[in-house]
Amino acid sequence: MEPTYRFMILSPQKQVLDADVVSVTAPGELGYFGVLAGHAPFISMMKTGDVEVRLAGGEEKRFRISGGIFRVEKNSAVLLAESVEEIAAAG
Image (cartoon, rainbow, N blue to C red):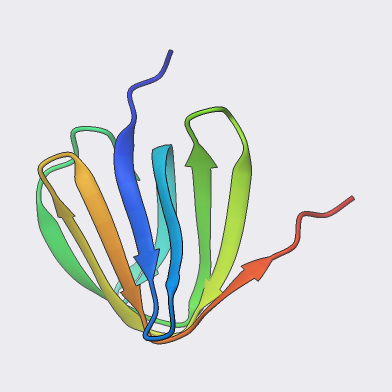
């Protein structure tokens, strides 16, 4: 089993996601970045783009965000997004 960490996506309106994940790829202000379990602490401003999340069970989810802040600390991560919309899976 791959290592996981806790990941939350929050918008001003609601909590969009709170799950154990294997990886997250997100649109940082300086370009896309990826986060795996055990990542060093950091904070990044976000730009508009897609966030790709691979959940602990293997399921993948995608969200479109517009701006915000991403924080990684103590094997958990939080994305505070200005707006969030889940993108339906193809198929």
